[in-house]
Length: 62
Image 1 (spheres, rainbow, N blue to C red):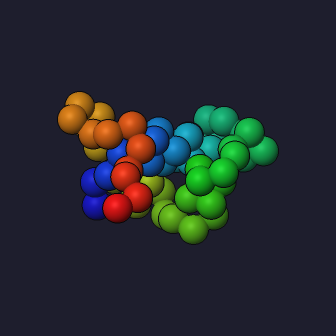
Image 2 (cartoon, one colour):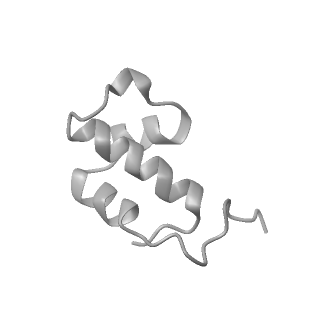
Image 3 (cartoon, rainbow, N blue to C red):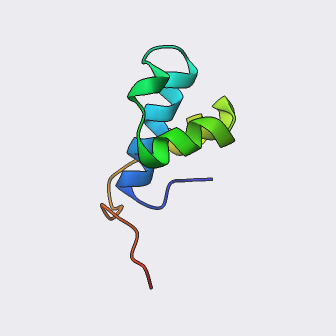
């Protein structure tokens, strides 16, 4: 499942880093913290691997 925005991709990357023990879980905030708790390392890897080019910074609400 590819990320829908750059913000989602960045949050997945932060959560993945914590899952792998590269950063502290206590450093996570907001969406990355909930992603860390609810998603597997494989799911996070899929989201974080999405290319940013052509993606909006944030997904529109419409």
